[in-house]
Length: 268
Image 1 (cartoon, rainbow, N blue to C red):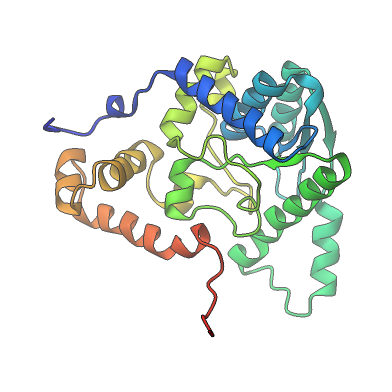
Image 2: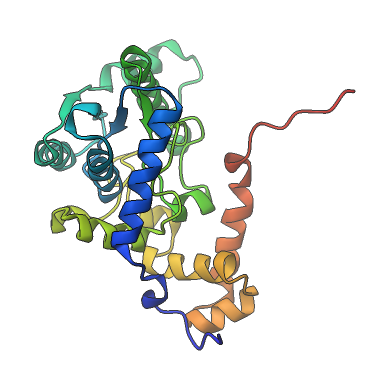
């Protein structure tokens, strides 16, 4: 089939079938791990809300624990949205304020540099990963990640932070598709279409940091990865510049180490 142009509709899926596949995946993963349920971090955003909903569909409310982990740069709106989502799903949840841990880290680490946004910002998801796994170990559960395909492909996540999980139920769905799935699941619209932010520093938004809107980024990735188009063809079909497409390619290459196990030198 000849692709004349790449528009959002090429990403459209049968979301009833998508839900069915993911629910089975969650059930099978918990059973294979001989676990008693799951732990999921709730941020108040569309990804974690969608994953939380899918976990409830798979396991029921009693086997899903939501952890809300605000930091020094988390907005109160996100905290309230995370709480309301947990209440809507009727799951148990806990609020674990990680700010004191952040502040202690700044005192203990002699190299602490608050002006380095990336290094300092990445402390937060790594603390959250520790909190999630503590609860998972304590309760014999697995940690469910909330990363989507867009973020995984370009490496837009923290290694051993939000990338440190047991399973990734929406890891094969682009951000656009996650939003559509969220609508299908009945996630409130203001959460579905909220401006995405990792909250790594005050005022941070995902699209501003990445430098490309998700709508366009998803189409470029779909062309490069799923359709295996050449960069020039992707630029033509998406009606964007070759410079932007090449920027996406560089992000994919730069983030490749995050998607692979740590390399080992062969001795024998």
